[in-house]
Picture 1 (cartoon, rainbow, N blue to C red):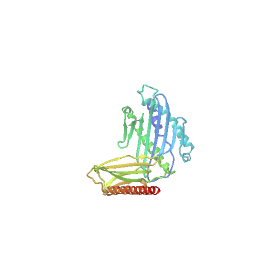
Picture 2: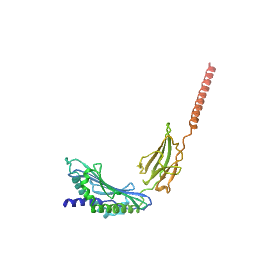
Picture 3: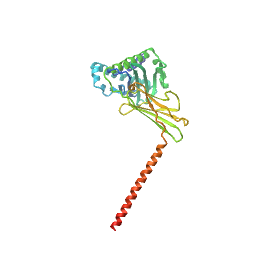
Picture 4: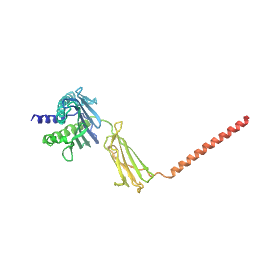
Length: 339
């Protein structure tokens, strides 16, 4: 009975935790995420770090060493107020005890009690034009996925054999109520408040370039690159003569961060040798573009251009040799006059 109460206490504190603020709501894609990282042994908790971010901008930070909630933005102190910050700080201090309990129970077969382990909790929710589009709740132990919430299936999935013994807890009505309440109240609703207060950063449309490569064996490869855009959500796809289809082997780099906190993505399309690669376009959809933007793929390089380059090089060589010959002739004449 006492063990069940401790389990409920651990997950209750974990779900009611967060750092909040307020900012102007924008009709675009936004995400709110929490990262909990605990390091400890079966005997003690060595450190606990909590980070909250909205649209990849860090809002607040906490660690066990100083037990202080630090707001990364000055306006956060005014938005929350001293009492709210103090209340959340007390929750985080209490959470340290619950992570200690987690290490003792999640790692029961550990023979070396002094060995360090890492427990991480990832919580993420996304809005698109003020509508919730997705949410994520996931646990990881020692860098490996432990369990996660499957939105489509509507239940929790054990991702390691050791996690199976916790399924009765995850499948309980209490646990599911707590998860739904946390995602709605602490992730979705708090993000809306954050978006109503102040703009985190300016949105930027993507800078798009489209290129092609013609291989000697006749294969044609297209590249469509979008970079420097914000927010992260973007969609790129290929069309031929204005229609969707499958014409070759497609691949994508995935959306990656740039050093300036914007994002980058590149998609490629490799055509078979029989396809000349005409009529293709790259279509880019991003909130800052308004409507989908169409970027035509360049045509096949003309064969006349290499010959023009060769003739230009020959002309330059002839000019240089002529100048050299004239200089040598002038030098000889000058030397003969002196003699």
